[in-house]
Image 1 (spheres, rainbow, N blue to C red):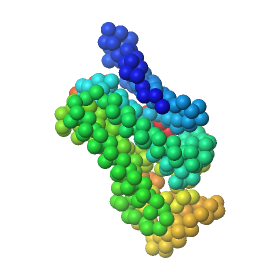
Image 2 (cartoon, rainbow, N blue to C red; image 1 turned 60 degrees about the vertical axis):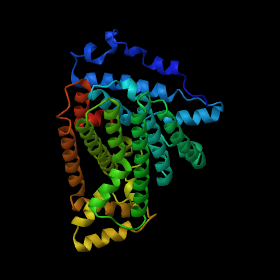
Image 3 (cartoon, helix red, strand yellow; image 1 turned 90 degrees about the vertical axis):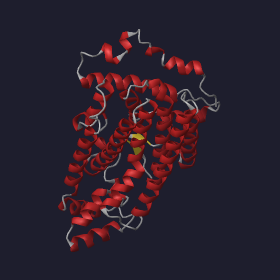
Image 4 (tube, rainbow, N blue to C red; image 1 turned 60 degrees about the horizontal axis):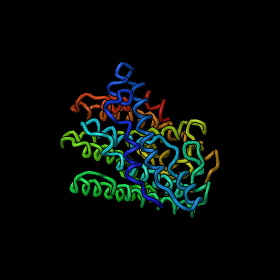
Amino acid sequence: MSSMPSDDFNSIHKEDDPNQEMINPCHSIQKLSTGFRALIYLRRHTRKITQLLNSFSFENPDLQAMYQYAVSGGQRSRPLLVLLACEAVGGHARTALPMAAAIELAHKASCIHDDLVDGDDYRRGRITLAKHYGPEKALAVGDLLISLAFEMLEMLSVPAELALQCSHLFTQTFRIMATGQLKDLIYSKGHTPNLEDSMQMLCEKTAVMGELALRIGGLLGGGQANDVEALALYGKKMGLAFQLMNDLNNFWGSELTVGRVPNTDLLARKKTPMICYALEEATSSKRLRLNNLLTMNGDTNPEVVTEIRNLILETGAPHYIDQHINTLLTEANEHLSGLPGSLPKDILKLLTDRVFISKIYF
């Protein structure tokens, strides 16, 4: 493997010359609608993240192909949040780009391992790495991405104390994510958590990465402590909201809209917040029946899945999750109120709009 030369890193940012007005989003597209300006901004920064990810090369062509397959695709939402947070507090995206790429590598690794655990063949309509190359190679590629993520941290050009703080936060987040994944497995194979514990599991497994992205972006942008904390809270609530939206889509959606076979959470008997809410709100007799059905691991009989769905629907669980998503998005938006006005802030606020989210992410 060859590390990325510094001149390649500089070339990614040569377009950031402030004299090139057409590249400065705050000047060149200020007359456009916020939504359109947001899409241009996100596309531009997505390209930079992808260029940095593509800078890793391997002598073995098969390994290169597996790496490219692993890092391609997806919306780059987490690394984009790093850059948005950095610039929302007055920093420059260039400073945070290595961290953004590291977080994307870590996220991709977690997705590969998650697909292996769940036995999924598709992720957002695309064949998973495990299905394409086999589980053994997929496991090794996931481990490789984690090592590259830590290598990417070495490219941070910031004071040593700040670099150490970022590294600590990154490592701590990985530990929390692993804990959340283990809890998910424990819950799906036996113990049923209450609603609060199920939500906490999702925060650890998924939302913590959003929290990291916003917190670390704010730190690298030189933000004040209160602004960094506000961004972190925004990231945590947005991360949980996105996961709950994903769970809701899995429950309601078709294979076309979900990007994989729907109802996989029910088939795997995952104790999602929707399931836990249903168990808490169901009548005693129906709670017993639902519990019995959920313990029938491996039973993919369509009639059983339909009965589980109907019992969940009777409790109003999907509506509760839908309303909780709205609450999380509203609270996330409110956390941004103290930040100075800027295009990155406007984009972060726009990401709390479910209509906008559905158009670009779901």
